[in-house]
Length: 330
Image 1 (tube, helix red, strand yellow):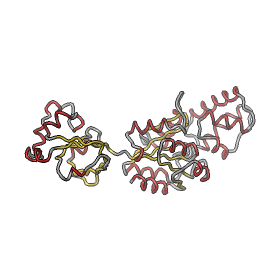
Image 2 (cartoon, one colour):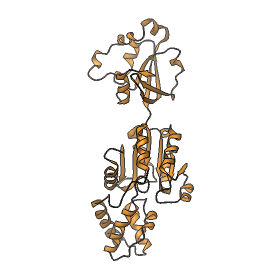
Image 3 (tube, one colour):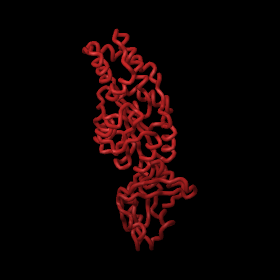
Image 4 (cartoon, one colour):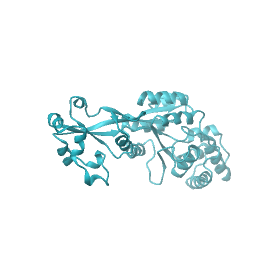
């Protein structure tokens, strides 16, 4: 549908989600669940993809105005008091309304959402995790561990990370765990970007997806402060629409609670969302949320683990990730 600038911008801004039309033969083909693409009347490069969620059919706009919330029909608080169904006579005559009836097409803008894990997916944090992990171990007189091992320790939260480190050195006790955990968090939080970089080629692919109206979120088992700080520092504040890390009392992955909450907050439906990660925990998280789940091979784990944990697709490069995402969601 071609739209004038004002209604187009209102839909894009979330101010309007009921489009008023004549219930003529053309519109009677529309069904709930259909996707409609709106094109800006003065700029054909600007489009909006929306999904029909309801059809409100009336005999006239007078009846429609009396029944539907006008704020959803494009009116604002400033002009709602002067809203008049005769406004629509400029577009459809009373004779046309009487012959066909009218319809309020309730739409929901389609949010194409990519939810990412953080460690080993959008950022190479293994050197940083190993660095601070080994500093914490050495401070307690424990021999450091090769960085490669940390790729198998990470992924299930900092407490589990420390447990795996101490078990690897066969020296776990509750008191030692508490002490190493406290020191690790203090050092890591003081310099969260230390030795951390964006994977080669990934930022360019994400920039391209952003330019094509995809939105991004991170759901991580990493402590919330560290997750937000490192992502916002290296990618830029606001690059990700939402970043969720581990807080006191939060439910960790592979429970899908945080993923589903992010989807709700950003208005994304299951069919318009993918989950992307690099470990079995991530694959299980995506599957538990009923999402199309993509495993990446540039992270902490191997293909076999991703396959066994149910990945729908596995990619070796950011370019392949772009191809899989756009093929899935368009």
